[in-house]
Image (tube, protein in one colour):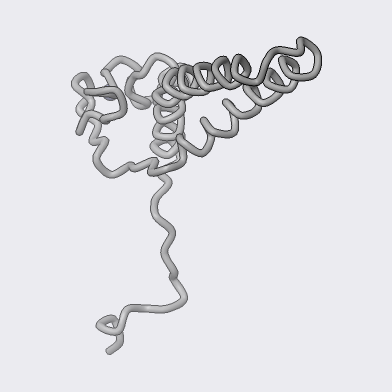
Length: 127
Ligand SMILES: [Zn+2]
């Protein structure tokens, strides 16, 4: 079975393999397996990666807006803080699920796993 486009599947919150099954059972909780193609999702873990990318994306949007409101529109500081705080929370909550789905889909597509050293064997590997 060919895999679905990871970007399209992620934006739709769908399985990266078939593109049909729901990826999430909660806001950020991944399903243990795809309900359509039964692909196992338990081996992949995006960890803190989605939050880091969301911080970069939201910061790139919110910080210039704060500067524009301060230096071009001359808003009072309390209004700028209020607008920026609401925008930061709203954008972060809106982007976290698609970013998590995107990282999971790319991790699944490229069979990425935890890095391991291969130059040193475990002590019980030695004969
Ligand atoms: Zn599937």
